[in-house]
Length: 187
Image (cartoon, rainbow, N blue to C red):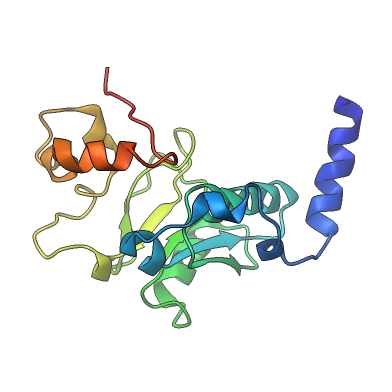
């Protein structure tokens, strides 16, 4: 079975078929009336690297079919350079208010200078790989860059921004009544 994996990867990448026509789950299971999932625009940057295409298409299906986001687009880019990728997020006027995710953006540990209207919101997979970028316009005025949307706020209960993401019990109980949500407690 492992010998067939490269064949399926090549078939998926080279198929050229519109991935928005495929669904991992039944559409009746993902109907969402939540304004956040219906209005938020998400762009998934994708280069022509085969592994990047596979990861991006799987994440595209996960966002649409499992989480129920409707406004998800794959944005093809022709670059292998992470700095150029960040520059594309900053300068791409076709997508001015879209939250851009790049699952293949490798950044060095000395990474420090970001374009002025892009907010680094943390690692997307492993250390050294960054790919969660949102437009500054999506943040509130009192947010400090690199702080409020960064994944590290969830690692420390005493973080200044931790309380911004705590839900009231009534809202949490209402969400738990929907089969798509499950309660994962912080250890």
